[in-house]
Image (cartoon, rainbow over all chains, first blue to last red; front, side):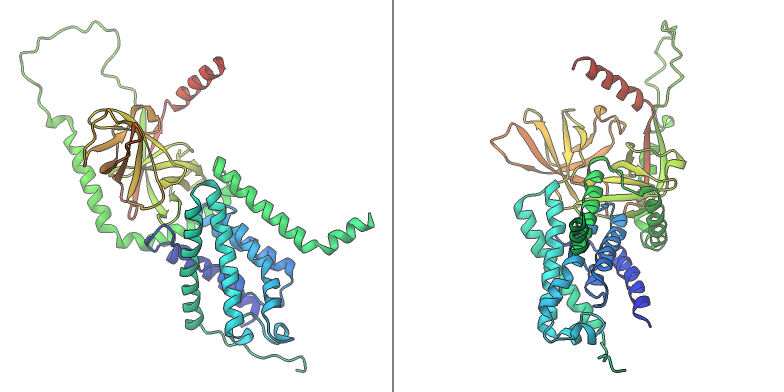
Length: 177
Length: 284
């Protein structure tokens, strides 16, 4: 399956799972909202130009927003992490050429520790911005801190489960072929 | 000029990012204020269709509780039928009415329109419901929405076949209510903690409130007919410093499984609003 088709399927699959499965989970606590959808942006290929990366982030967030009736909320957070993503990847890839030899960020292409850091930083950034926008219209500072921590913890757990269940085999590619 | 182009070329990605952020935030803040989303017509139709498909499956699993709620509502309405009541006796004298108004002819002020809920949420801080009835079926923004057991929320935007309802479980939602026993007015808000409980505020401490008391919609709320159940008192929060009660209410509507609602059209709302606005303008 081509990389493009795979990502198009992922786009719709992540949105549908987020809206019709994760948002339907009865609320455990007001600080815990299970977010997984932004993993789509973390899984986008290395080769995507920054312009398109930012644009896809915006469109992807806006798609979710129309389901939750909060136009712009998730779009803003997704645009931010899609824009910041290349900076973090540049810091995290251990050896020269990882971004050329592998298709997309994963445990096999980056290694456990760098990939975990990459996911952690972008998850925290996404939730902090999302909850910050919510906090501006209502809530207290305690609400902000509590919700960022609670939501990030549950998101990281979900991402870990997804990575283990759907282990992505990345092929090593060379220029010589 | 050349430098300007060079600057734009060099920082193109960053500028593009800023533009998208500004677009997203302007969408968000405009929606928070006026509840008018960009492309809301098209988007509402598309997400509505998706939700309808999903609800076709979900609805099947909730048939039992939905049926129970409808049977209970029918029972309550049957109790109110005129045939159940007897006149106090035959001793009443027949009198000719001196008022020259046909008192048998009533004007219907509130019109009820039923609708099916196709999507709802309780897990967010800003919860909305989508109902399968829209502007082509006489739904307009600013109409009250009730379920068989109590109030649900207010319509905020419509597309041709769907409407979005701001749920009572929304941080910006308030509704004017009164105590069923005493009649003192207050307002109900949601504090975002538990979807089964809302907060009643602004009721003076001179009023008598007990656990289990009913709180109903007030005559002044204009979106709802008076006397529709909002919730029952579950806890009175002690606050000696304030002269108003803070009361925790158990919501009458079960927001987890609401499937059918009635949208209430107040036929005199526009007239009332116009009069109030013109009066306000006159004294400013």
